[in-house]
Image (cartoon, rainbow, N blue to C red; front, side, top):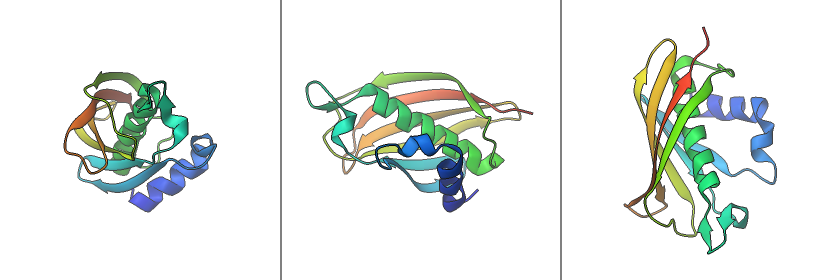
Length: 136
């Protein structure tokens, strides 16, 4: 699937993702990879003024899903079976970028990792690994 195909699929199958305004954007898909953007908004903040863990978790999950679907097609019932997060440093109050790389793309399982950065910064703020189950 192309970037535009994926965006249309997510809009159609997961309209709840955009409640309150669209936040997650597919910037590119490539060989076993995807790059997502989460736009900065106050609704993503937690006490202390940092971007919340659940917001970063959603970015990682959507980036994994996009990378997988870019290769297997529009399979709405591909589901997350595990996600693990390491929060490494406080993200800045700006857009976050999630860069996903698939480590394995099999017939039944896909495994990948997502590095999340504050836009314009080189340091990883969160690293996630995840596994998806692909229906037959």
